[in-house]
Image (cartoon, rainbow, N blue to C red; front, side, top):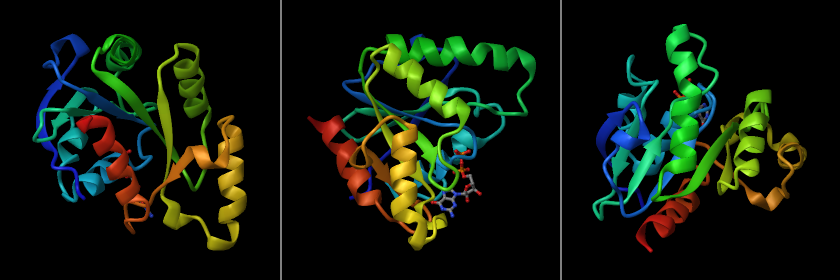
Length: 192
Ligand code: GDP
């Protein structure tokens, strides 16, 4: 079932976000497929476009379900085109959110399934792990991996992230693969 997400607001700091009865967040490097995935989860083509408009890519973008529970789209890391000031502000903004946001129950960390975890992804995972922030890895762009390579790629990606194969959710926003499982997962987190 598609998540009935509606855009709520964008904020520079987590302290400027409205309160929420329960929240999950999505993070990943720019171009990993985060907007496409959020759109696929909501079955809305343009929902996360708002997060991708200039000026908003560097903000925390919040969406809500009808029950008030929320999903936060965090700015993509490694964004090449940001001015120095914004780049310097990224870390405290994201770290502050991830460490201090009370309703946050789980962070979905997106990793490009075609290319595997980048150095920045691994830094992010180590940081989350070190700070005991619960996370779930989602491998994107499943359709870009050749079927003959998939078993090996699944194993490789999970190992690189120091996980078992079964710990990584594989999705394709383009083809819709794995989307229902992820929708159900988010729904469970946000409705119980
Ligand atoms: P974001 O920067 O993380 O929000 O990434 P986008 O959602 O804008 O996607 C970046 C690029 O990857 C775009 O060209 C998308 O069309 C492409 N993309 C995203 N998801 C998929 C997918 O599941 N399969 C394929 N083949 N391409 C994808």
